[in-house]
Image (tube, rainbow, N blue to C red):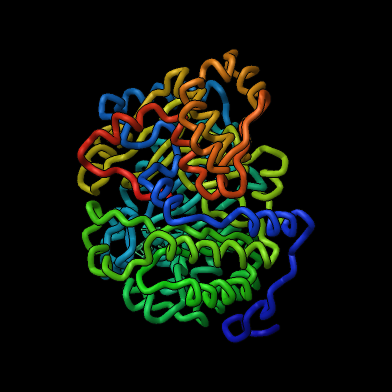
Length: 487
Ligand SMILES: C[S@@+](CC[C@H](N)C(=O)[O-])C[C@H]1O[C@@H](n2cnc3c(N)ncnc32)[C@H](O)[C@@H]1O
Ligand code: SF4
């Protein structure tokens, strides 16, 4: 067998194209020409809608008692379970990063964190009866492979003993190729992890220098080769467009290199510039591609990934046509939660670790953001809710509409009528009015039966979803900026 750390798994792009990809490519070429005025109108701050209502609406009147009540309701409903574990640590800071991270070279900090996390896992497991299958288990961060392989085994082992995993559970982890060894991958695979998501961002040396993330192509290539050899089912790669010193030509090379590695999925995130939250982003602010330049970088990525046969799932995500995300989109069973798109509809999500978010029944809850508060709350009662939200009927209705738009790119009005008993056109008269300009600008079509995003509308889908979000008006009046821009 070829040593995995020497040869790329598949040096030439795999041809995964089918007719629908070809059609999409042709349509996209026709539609994706925009003017500066268009960008000035639509490239404005807006949520990513990993939840509705969005996190700034949640509040601290929802606490641990409320979450316990929601836990009980979920257990009565015997819903399937999705578990999320947050490992906040990284060895060094990537200057673009907007995630909630703790930079710590000294790995001893992980030990007390893991002790508290295991207590939280114990407590959550008491609320989840053993008949309920865990269909999804995801480790995110930060960088979960900051942990040593024995630490990973220990945390995984504790969790596996306390919950019932479905035989076909999706078990995924975010890995940073710069700190992930072959031993890490071997242990992960042995434990049952079947999905990897790895950060790349951009391969250009000047970009890497500016963001303080030196990650040679060969390192990423070899890690993907090792993961394939070990039998991981699905490999995702994260890229970002809009980073300092990027240009369309430079990014084209990164995209070609990624295509040569043939990952199953690609997340092509828009760089979120939020210097009011992450001061270090100011270091390169003068070198960021903006407006049309940023759009051209995105369009280069989009065009090349479609050309290589990937399908655009929406909101920055691409997948091969045979990937279950693409299949779920075709079957209209795709859903969205805090980890992005998922095929596991109907599962209740239990988040553990600092900042972790739970989405259970019709409520959201977020854990304390700093280790001391989280640790104290876990020690006191096992539940570390800092804030949360119980959805009203109107929230649930709007969540269903926004979710359909983001996942299926079409809202069938009679589906909403059947689920909620409302006349769509009357109930959403104001939202339809707000969408009039987008209709004229070619972002959507509407008739008596449906509202459907066009190709251009799929790229600016956040703008369309915003029309259904009544909380935005008040949020936009607040002096403090909350969201990054939609492009
Ligand atoms: C938790 S990290 C991924 C795992 C690992 N820490 C790594 O960096 O390889 C999740 C992803 O969020 C994305 N991300 C972080 N900050 C971002 C920002 N400001 N704008 C857009 N995407 C961002 C990056 O693509 C990153 O890979
Ligand atoms: S991008 Fe990943 S490795 Fe870099 S600071 Fe953020 S979470 Fe850590």
